[in-house]
Length: 226
Length: 226
Image 1 (tube, rainbow over the protein chains, first blue to last red):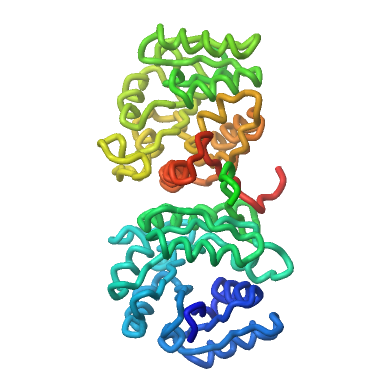
Image 2: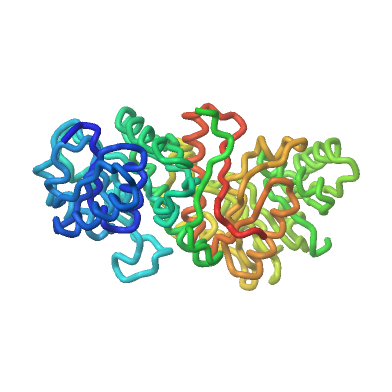
């Protein structure tokens, strides 16, 4: 697998599939990962039907991980630690793992507009404690609406706050620019994922109160032009 | 004092003064509060110079509080509990107290881009535990740039997430609409202040990284038109 390959674990879910569609539409090579290879293959087929000439494959999570430059974790929060432990041996120094999970209270039977506390502070920091040395963890994509991602005809119109160490953070910010209407915003160190993840709960509550099926997005104003 | 009077305690500070200017420019009666009456009078004079026909007064915090329909707490987080305790006897059922404080780590000598944990969950909930029965607490205005507020010639261009019980929340959302470019967004129950307050720390870090003196603002996209 080439270093510019993007693996999306849990890419069979709404948000992961949306990212796969968008990155394929931008011409990037994507490997969709799932616990079961056949589900990953199905998702890859779905992407292939919507994006002509998509460079997309479907593999079991561990196989999808190996050799991919960027590995995006698009699994529900409660499956995060298990997924990372399962692929841990397949990760190698230089790879970037992107955490987009959110510790919503749904993980313990609560409401999606509530958070639960995570000992490490955030899902992203939990992931950072599980990956091998030399693998960078970056927090991103938590607040991008799956519906908007999947509607390829329209720009996504959302800012993505990207947090982590400088060099891998810049690489993930560049990834955002591949998607029309998505903008990567420098979110500083990984610990800021605590804030960005919680914004998801706020947006879920807003979607309910305002009855917005597409999902409300966030834009930062006053940023200098890129 | 009339019920539609807005008291701004700590209105001598940058953000409180900015709100006073904007509400006066919208024709509302404002009373600036301070621990020392003479400082409040000075601030009121500053407002009067910039806004012709401003209905503005300066009073000691307790005097400013009494009878005002809405009392905005614009004091640094570390002075929040002390200020509320000092005005507690002057509050009466039906009044709304607006919490705009943020538990930044500066309160304990840390960085402005870091938060400290508050037992009650947020500054707003801490305030809610201190006011008399029948006084509503609403969380708002944390993320509005003081610089933008004070530049009367330009719209503020920022969304204000307003959290609290339904009726007082609606009243504070209506207050936002008085200021050009400010929009009140329904932030649900008061506990969501935990999230909104922490966004301030994120924005402070962004202002530093992007060198934005005016202050970066937040806009939510996809909201239905008011």
